[in-house]
Length: 246
Image (cartoon, rainbow, N blue to C red; front, side):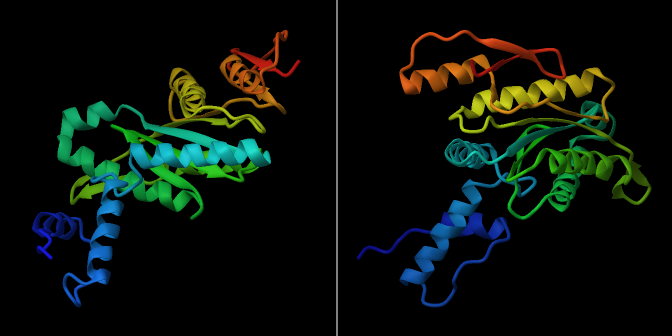
């Protein structure tokens, strides 16, 4: 059998700090270790080591499916560093990268092993928390905010930065097969509200039993092939309409 050309893959894996099975080169165990390492690389953000956007989307889909089937509670948090552009403009992008790495570790320290933390893009991070009661959701969101506010980011001798984050969150609708884009938009809306209200704060969408958005209701009734219904509007904490079951 023609020898496998794995040099580029092995160099990439080595640069990432991962190890592969060294014994019995070209053995099944060796090839499998290379495949496993490449799969890990493809699912991780290269700067922070957190889940990347692609793998996080998969985690969201899994959780939405579980919530729809079992009715469990699941919270999506969006976390954004306040005034991060000033960090890059003042100290340079290398300092900004170090801030992102340190924040990633703080986020991991604030959540449970079962939770999924991802770099969503730029200075924005996202967390999916399965089996998350409303009380615990408030606790962990505030824990994240305080972990940044109360501890400076030590970059190098003589340079420490005091930063804050804004946190927004929304629960997945129970017993409803929603979409990741809708869930993300709802959490983002709360993040923007936290920004508008002065930053360094937490805003979680007010939730009610079986409260869903108009888009989610259309998905539900479309899947069930049911006819007309009259939406019943309620107001969430930010004053935006929410649609209850009729």
